[in-house]
Structure formats: structure tokens, C-alpha cells
Image (cartoon, rainbow, N blue to C red):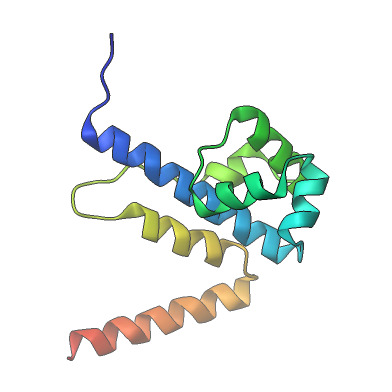
Length: 125
């Protein structure tokens, strides 16, 4: 019998939040409502809402339906998910990466410049 460590359990709960955020981000980029995506994916809109909020872990079946409805790959959905390392909250880093990845290159550069400016200001507090 294999027992999950606390860090593995925390990572699994982070996955639900990160995947949900990723689904919401891509859905918004495609200008789809939750109801429209749920209809395209043939899943209940309430279930989709819970998935997006990370309140419910998605089954492979429901993920496959959502991925197909969004016209993306599983790789696109999971590419920013990494286990936590110590005190670093990778769910926040993943959410930032999710949002920035949907921007065009010029906007990505703008976000990077804004972050650089913000970090510079934070160092001089």
C-alpha cells in the first residue's frame, strides 16, 4: 500500500485549482461563457463552475471533454503544473504563467517589463 505524503496531497489539491484557473483563462480568451463551454463539452454548467474554482477534481473523462471543447491538447492544459518546493506556492506562479501564456508576444513583453519595474520598486522600499 502506498500512502501519500502531505506535500503530495497539497500538490494534488493545487492541481485542481491550477487546472481550473487554466480552463477559465482559456475559456475567457475564447470569449466563451461557462454555459457555452459546458454545452460544447457536454457537461453540466454547475460542474464546470466547480472545476474552474478548483472545488472539484476533474475526472479524465470530463477533462477530455473540456480539452476537446476548448480545442487544446492535454499538454496545453497541464504545461505549467509543477509540484511545490518548500515555501514556494507554485499555484500562484502557475496562475500567473497561465494568464501570461495566452497573451500575444508584445503583451507578454509588456507584462515582463511591468514585473521588472515592480520588482525594482519593491527592492527600494
